[in-house]
Image 1 (cartoon, rainbow, N blue to C red):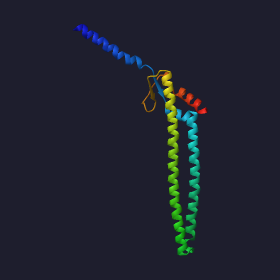
Image 2 (cartoon, rainbow, N blue to C red):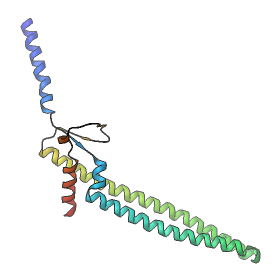
Image 3 (cartoon, one colour):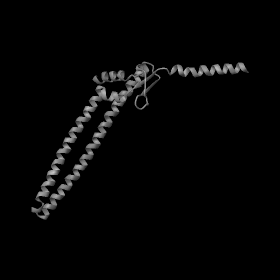
Image 4 (cartoon, rainbow, N blue to C red):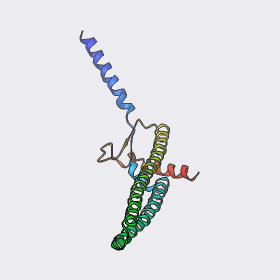
Length: 172
């Protein structure tokens, strides 16, 4: 009975040791750093910034036009006939409503662009990480921020390697 228990204990120890031996290569990736410092991430950020600036400039010009129309109406209100004043107020309400619709449309477009760019970059990161993990036989790769990593050995962080590969692929 003791022999069977000893053999069972040894088998259990060896069986538990196998997963430990397999799980010995862990990598860390800082996705935020990749998004901020890779060429692809910087290009996407620049593209989003350019679109935001274009849309903001357009909205500011339209807002200025709207404000001028409002000031013109206020300054001329006492000199205008009621029908003309009503027509100008109606025009101001329409343009104000159009401005709000356009503002929402631009915001939605920018959100969609940001989502599309971020999704594309995340896919590129995942593809590169997957390739590195398979090639270098990592058993686990953890995202630095989301994984709650507070400390890691220098050799565990593969972020720079991922950035280098994404930059190489982005040039093509």
